[in-house]
Image 1 (cartoon, helix red, strand yellow):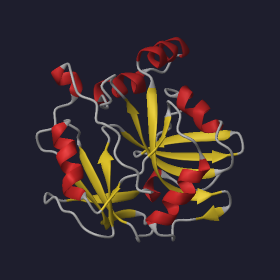
Image 2 (cartoon, one colour):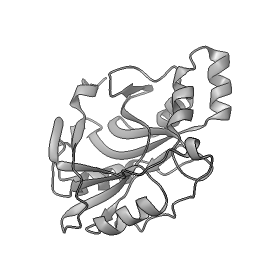
Image 3 (tube, helix red, strand yellow):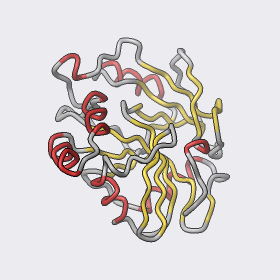
Image 4 (cartoon, helix red, strand yellow):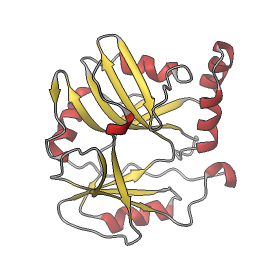
Length: 219
C-alpha cells in the first residue's frame, strides 16, 4: 500500500473575497468528510482527515472503489446527500457512528453515501502530484466513470463570481478556487482558496432544499 497518509493532503487557505480569474478553476464545496482513498490490488482504504479508517462504517464506498481498475490514491469528499442534491452533514455523522454490522446495514439503506472525487495523487506506480491540476484532472477523469456513489468533480474555469452566485442561490456551503497550473502540495497552500457562504444553512436544519443544476463541463 502506498505510504500516503492524511497528513499528505493538500489544504486550502480561507479567504472572504469572491473573485473571478483566468487560470483558476472553481469547484463546489461539499459538506462532508475529507477522505484520502488508497487502492492497491483488491485492498481499499478510506481515511479521514484525522487519520481514522472509515472502512467499517462505509463498506458500500469501499466496494465501489474496489470495482475501479488499477491502483491509485485519490482525494475526495465523502457525503450523504439529500434527495434535493444537497449534502447532509447530520446524516453523514449518523452513518459514521454506525459500527456493528446490523446498524451499518440499516445506515447504508437509510443514508446512502457518495464520494466526490476531485484530485489524484498516484496512478498505478506513478506519483502525479508534480503535474499541474488540469493534467491531474485528466488522469482522474479517465480512471473511472461516474456512478451513483462515485462522482468526478470537474469545476468551472475563470468564472468564480458566477459559481458563487449559484452557491448562494441554492444554499450550498461554498466553493474552492484552485490554480490550474499548481502541483499537489502537502499542507496549506494559497494555490487552493476556500470561500464559504456565510449564510449557508444545512438542509437538515431547514427541512427542505433545492437541487443545484449540473454545472457546465470544464471541457
